[in-house]
Amino acid sequence: MAFLSIIRRWALRELLPIREIARRTGLSRNTIRKYLRSGSVEPKFATPERASKLDPYAAKLASWLKTEAGKPRKQRRTVKQLHADLVALGFTGSYGRVAAFARGWRAECQRQLQTTGRGTFVPLTFKPGEAFQFDWSEDWAHVGGERTKLQVAHIKLSHSRAFLVRAYVLQTHEMLFDAHRHTFRVFGGVPARGIYDNMRTAVDRVGKGKERQVNARFLAMAN
Image: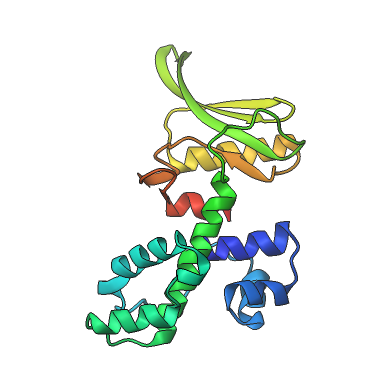
C-alpha cells in the first residue's frame, strides 16, 4: 500500500508522466495506468497471498539493504550479489523475487524521506498550502446534563494558522477520518502534506530514529 501511495503522489500531485513512474518503480506502464484508473487507495488481489520462499530471509535482506545504503555507491553489493549471498544461506527462490523486494524497500525509504525530510530541524515558516498540523487534546463539556470528557481534534494550516476544531467522544479512526473530511471541506482543499505526532491511530510502532510503522487504515486515508 505504501508503494501505491508513492505512485499516486508522483502521478496526481507531482504530475510525472507514466513512462517516468514506470522507470522509477520497475512496474509496467499498464500496471500503473490500471491502479490510477481504478482510483484504488488499497491494492486488491484476485488470489490470496501465498507464503514466499523469501519470507524467512526478509529481515536479513532488509538489514543488508540498509547496511549497503550507508556505503559509498561503488562499495555496495548489487542485488545479484545479495541474491547469491541469500542462496549461500539456503534461499532457493529467484533473483526476480529478491529484486522486487529491493525495489519495494527502496521505494518505502524514499517515501519516508519525502514525509519526514532529511534535516533534524523543525521549519518555522511554510508556503501557502504546504502543510497542516493535526493533534488531539482532551476537554470537558456538559452534554445532556452530564459532564462528559471530549476528544478534541485540532487541524491548523501551517502558513496562515487558520484552524478548525471538532469534538468527539473517542479518538477512533472513524473520528479521525471525519475530522479530516470536514476540515478539507471547510478549507476548500487539501494541503501538500500533514504533520502528526505518534498518535495510535496513525502509527502502529515507533522504531529507531525516524522509523515508523504506519497504520494501514491511516495510510489508506492518506492515499
